[in-house]
Structure formats: structure tokens, C-alpha cells
Image (tube, rainbow, N blue to C red; front, side, top):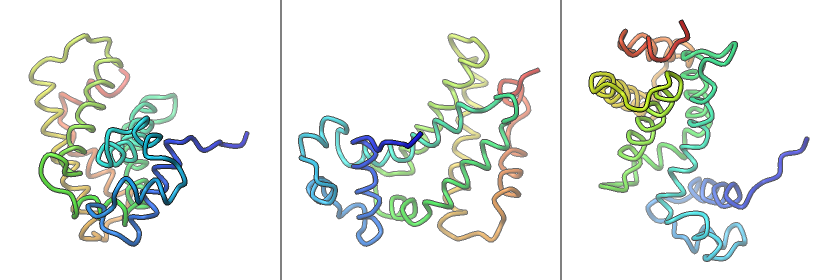
Length: 185
């Protein structure tokens, strides 16, 4: 079956394309819409602003990767590996986003929050919990801050560590108490 590009995907691809030659902080909604041939109102029907678009570009693949954890043959390390492969294949765009956004709208601040929210939601759903214990929620925050920081360092500084080995290291940093919430027993 052939994949049809949605309007959201078209807008996202336009933004990524523009980021190849322009700093993301200099790209305007007008630039994005002109590049992909949609109107500004169409853009705003899908996204609040370009920062919302940036996070959607980041969140969609990450959300899909996290949702696959504990499928019959897909575990947490494979999710980490898939995430790193996504980062590696979008390295230029992600570095542009990391280096050229600041403050409340900074890419890294939003990436922390998205990863934390997605991991919290997955753990609650996977374990049938309405609320997470405060300790587990705090361990999630600790783990997410550490892994996102390391992943950014890996991207920006072009660390020569292979993806599979780096995923193994990221998994090794997962607190034991948190592991129990991520793996089927």
C-alpha cells in the first residue's frame, strides 16, 4: 500500500528542507508555507507556531517507537536503538534545532518534556496505573534528563560510538526500579 503524505507531513518536510540551508530560528511560517504551497491558515489549522511544528516532527517518530516497546519481539533497547537511528538520520536538522532555539521554546527543553510525558504515559498504560508513584515519576525525570542530554551530546559532538553500543549504554543507565515498569514479567 502506498503511503499518502498528509498536510502535516508536507508542512514538516518543508520545514526540514528549509532547515538544510537556513537556521531554524530564521525560518518563518511564510517561508514554510511558500515552500510547500499551502496557505498560512492551513499551517495554523495544524500547528500553533513553528515551535509546535518542530516538536511534532520530533514527537511523532519517538511516540511510535515508544509505543512498540514490549511488542512480541521489540524491547526497550530496540526502542532506544530505533530512536538513535532516527536521530542519526535527521542529525543536521536536530543539531540546527538544538543550536538555534532558546528559552521556553528551546528544542531541548521541549524534548525533555515530550520524552518525559511519553515515557510516563507508556508506563501508566502498560502497567494499568492511573497515577505513578512519586519515586517512579522522579526516576523517569532523572532518566529522561540524562538520556536526552547524552543524545544531544552524541549528535552535536559526533561521538564515534556505534548506535547499538550507545543504546546499550542508555539502557544500562535505566534505574532498576524503572526497569520493572518497562518490561513484561
